[in-house]
Image (cartoon, rainbow, N blue to C red; front, side, top):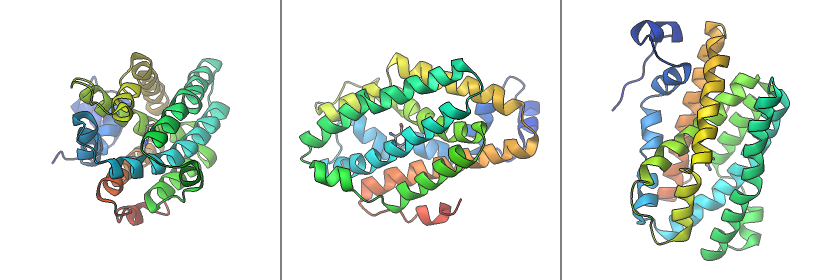
Length: 246
Ligand SMILES: Cc1ncc(CO)c(N)n1
């Protein structure tokens, strides 16, 4: 298991002089960062060995997550310090609510999930914990706090997406397209932009605020793992209770 770096960003820089603020966030979030990006669920997407019921469970839950992610992006557009940053975030929000929404609707149809089911699905405990964390960070917190949550979600998906994209695409279009959505150049460049934005925003913060950002990033990683676990096993997340109320 990869061990977490426990020290401050300043300590991390002493040990790794060229490190980025976001390298510290990922390192500080171990072993959960590696557990999220290397989850067996992500490998089953790439191998095409995903059971249909697990994937349907995942997509129903993820559709409600995406709705909260769209709200998070809305808050971040409002709080972003420059027009350039607002444009980047708004561009991703547009993608999420058009192309990605279309992906969900076609996949639900292929998997036999009716609109009545996905439109009225109650969130499970993990997705509720995600919603609480996203809304409190991006809604009530600072730009940097909301950005840390977005970064974790998107960087995690880019990491497994790029790895699974090296395999031949599975036959099921909903698996193949989910990989492509998270491995295309446009997505990679968006995640690189979030990293740069977090790098310079985070490096300029006082140490106590840097710790807060690192704790949020780590909580997000724990929830990413719990989310995959819940879909994979069909048992709605025991791990979520550890993080509720964050
Ligand atoms: C749970 C979760 N995390 C991250 C992403 C990437 O947007 C997603 N679709 N779902």
